[in-house]
Length: 359
Image 1 (tube, helix red, strand yellow):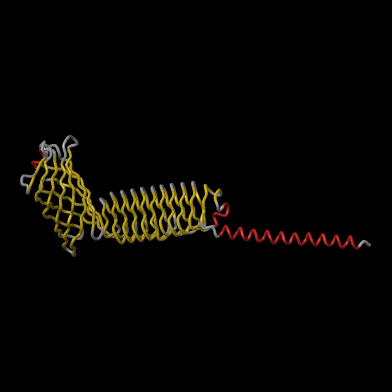
Image 2 (cartoon, one colour; image 1 turned 90 degrees about the horizontal axis):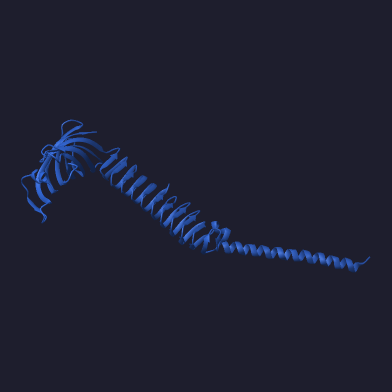
């Protein structure tokens, strides 16, 4: 038997096994080092996933700084993230995210979100600025600013939108160009047209549909015999006014409209004192303008459960370009006109009163 051959063959097998074990150990160390390097990335640069310094592992990485020419994705961000188009973060953020189009946060956002169009996040302590909308189905603390819409479940802070704000509960302010919608509001609602809430003491809008508030239909007249059918609506303190009517003195400018804001200064079971700022315009739908801005102090007396009579003095500013507008009132505290004599302005004391049905 050739023992030399057996010895040589056994040695070769042992060498192969040893070599394989060493290669396996080396590969294991390399992969372990690679995983460790990927998971500890603090800087992330790229074009769009997965063309970036974190590669296909990017959705699992937490970064201190990210910069992507188009879009980036990560598990979390702990500093600043910038993307030409979008940032997508699967979990939470602490810091500032800036994107040309949108930011999308899977969980809580803490810090700031700035995008040209849209921010979406679950909630958090955040200042969110979106060119079109900010959307959060969770609880937010901070502020939402958007060109069109803000949505949140519970907002502790402020919402500012060009068109609409919507939240379940608000502890702060809602300011919208058109409409605010909420349930319980502890703060101010300010809308260019309408506020809707279950509870809101300080709604500022032309129409305020507050579930536990007050609404009324009134018939009023003033020193110019402008008679208006007006709708008043609001909360415990503030309310809005909108009305249409007719002037019984003029021949041409007879169609009247009114919009304003009022406040309940004092209230008891049978008596209350209201203050109102209102603008009343008269139109003939031809050439010429008439606008009267009034500050009114209106004591009101309840004569039944739903019926109230009110009346009081008013301080008025008049701006008109018509002869009828000048002649509606004879006595002025002071008056002036432009050098061409076609615009008349004046201050004077007047009065108004009426009857309203409360429901």
